[in-house]
Length: 66
Image (spheres, rainbow, N blue to C red):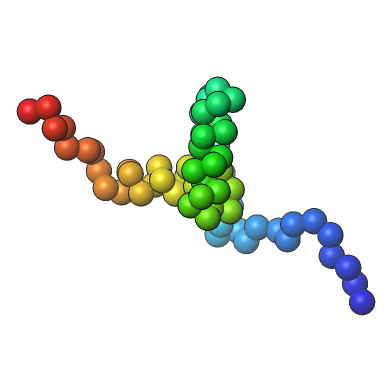
């Protein structure tokens, strides 16, 4: 029996080749991490990525100050 260690390789079609860096304070990071955990996300970065992509797909937000 062979024991595999570490993460399996990411399939080529799922590899991400760009990185977006967002600077947050420790308290902001804790708040975001809790929200991601409460949402059942695998990780904070996955949760943030999903939210950003959903928001981008919806297009620009309507202004309520008209």
